[in-house]
Amino acid sequence: MRQGPLTGLKIVEFAGIGPGPFCGMLLSDLGADVVRIDRKGQGRASPADVTSRGRRSIGMDLKSPDAVEACLKLMEGADAIFEGFRPGVMERLGLGPDVALGRNPKLVYGRMTGWGQTGPYAPAAGHDMNYIAITGALEAIGTEDKPVPPLNLVGDFGGGALYLAFGLLAGIIHARETGQGQVIDCAMSDGAASLMAMFYGFKASGMWQPGRRNNMLDGGAHFYDTYRCKDGRWISIGSIEPQFYALLLEKTGITDPAFAQQMNRGEWEPLRQKLAEVIAGKTREEWTQIMGGTDVCFAPVLDMDEAPSHPHNRARETFVEVSGVVQPAPAPRFSVTPGAIQGPPPAIGAHDREALGDWGFSDDEIAALRAAGAIATAS
Image (cartoon, rainbow, N blue to C red; front, side, top):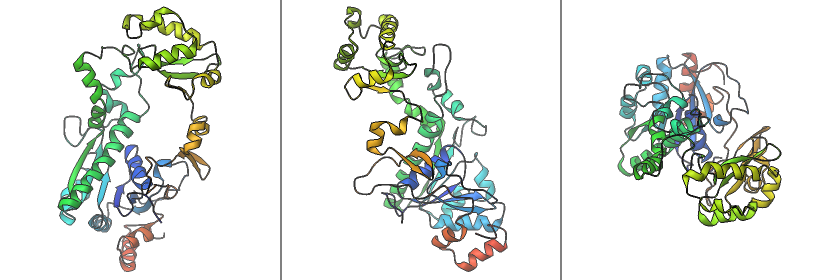
């Protein structure tokens, strides 16, 4: 029994990598019935494949006309579908948006790519780092020496999966109001650029200076940075507002009058060096006892082994363990219709009969698909 605010939504996911599976996970965690179309073949389920959790898998040979027709029938009963292939691939398969919307005019058709469906880079391969590189985001993140990729959080997941989920749900609302489906062109480069909105505003107002670690929010300010402690571990300090900065000075015991020049950019580096010396005098745990939970705007920098055990994360059950794998719990949280991990990551084709049957295929139709080699011969 599925649960969450999206219970009742029916979504078809064409299996991909990176942001596509993460989008599917987000939708499933909130209750949507997400059926994933995988390439037919042997594929074992791994509990560590966290972003595949909660879906049902149908293994299909999309070179088979019978499989293509089965996909179109699934689309007829779906609220939305999404795919992450290069532009033109779905059209060549006979599953492009024109055909799909012809079968289901209310369908929301999500297309996830790095560069988008149009533009000179559209046909080219790329990865998260490349997509955020042309937005101004990558140039602004890193050390004085070089830009540093911020994992693949900004492009794949922030600018990609989250914008795709947002776009699909917006499209579904519109379709329910008007009966009109549409295509969502979700480019990670577009999403990453959108995430930079505030910083382009800063630039326009003169609040943002060229160069990395030269601004308040990029590690340039002594009061918004990470610091190494006596034990070699790190803490984060974000004391921007004057009252929080004053509390930082109080908690660290700093009385040096030079620190009164909080917003003087010319003093940031010498003040950073002085603050670093103070922080280096105590361990991370000692600073956590002094500043943790206060308005200093402080948190210890934890690794992935430590994060699930932090008292705040434990209290909120931010992490859960499923089949021996520690992983993030569903987010955000709903007071009336809480989401849930709807099931483990599926093996390819594990739900051929079950999912097709639930989506309106008869036993004879399923048997015919097997006989034609469109799906696995056993499930």
